[in-house]
Image 1 (tube, one colour):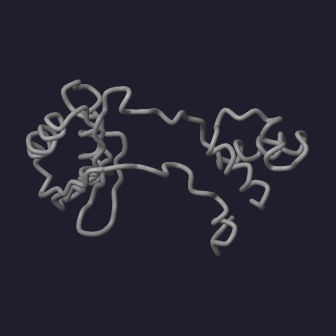
Image 2 (image 1 turned 90 degrees about the horizontal axis):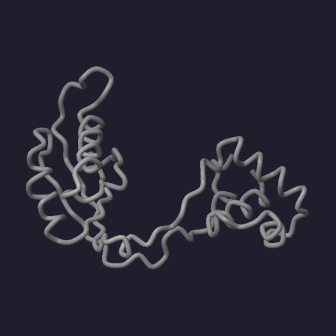
Length: 170
């Protein structure tokens, strides 16, 4: 990974639909060089796929919240921890039940809490039901802490250039 690769990643993060010709102009590299570099970034796993930045409010999801969940410690069931089982269950329920908010992301984390959920809800009633009723019915949930997003002014636009100066860069 060199400076050109980082500039390529910066540009495709900003616009995943950019043409190779336009990308070559923006990173000041010949299109042939860029094509092979881009292909290597994809094949080596630096680029896992392409996605759209969706306006969730237009789709009816008016609220975004991050929910910290403390899970009861217990013996893992087979290969899976209580945290993994909880995440699988909550994701399945969120996906199959239209009355629940959408759990967009779930992460097992360190600290006082075990799981971090990124939740998108249509309204406060839907989010309240999820927090007060749905999470409470999971036997391994000990406590939660909810953080409401007020505004997301700079989503997905942080530059990749930091990785060049980081000591563990590839």
